[in-house]
Image (cartoon, rainbow, N blue to C red; front, top):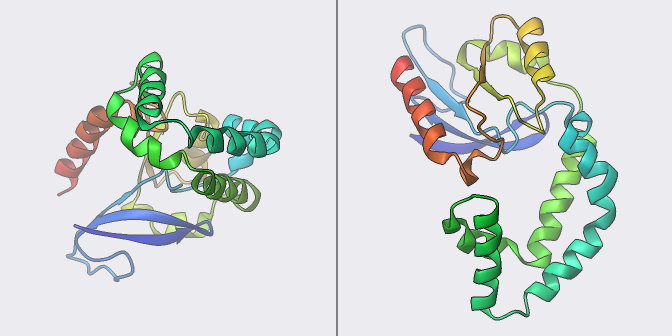
Length: 200
């Protein structure tokens, strides 16, 4: 297994490969499986037009200073209070509380400011799908769309299936969120494990 980053639609995207590295030319007898971690952001297109993109560009970008101020205040709380507040948040949202420690690292005005800057830059720069790159890698791609994804509406899946019928793409009927690592990491691991076994 090899990890690295490639540029997809002008955005650095995390990939994991089994076999040769992504820049290597494949031999006729060489079989390679590439997993594209779509949360970073994978095959991104029309991000600002998605429901979450509209929320981000229409409302959230205008309240970023308020968010950063509140996070700055949060940094003064004692660590036990921070843990309790975040634990309550995750319990109410029915998410595992083991996300508390990583979330505490994000609750920093500088970190959150950088996250928001990068997110808004993606909204501004990522417009249309890079069709040429998709065609060039069509035999390596397997795209998995969610039914409740606010970043990638089902219309994007329909467009992909219509414009690139050679691509293997399917819709997840299990209601798994876009940010599957927060609540559905085991379910997604099972799905990916099955796909890997099918293609090895």
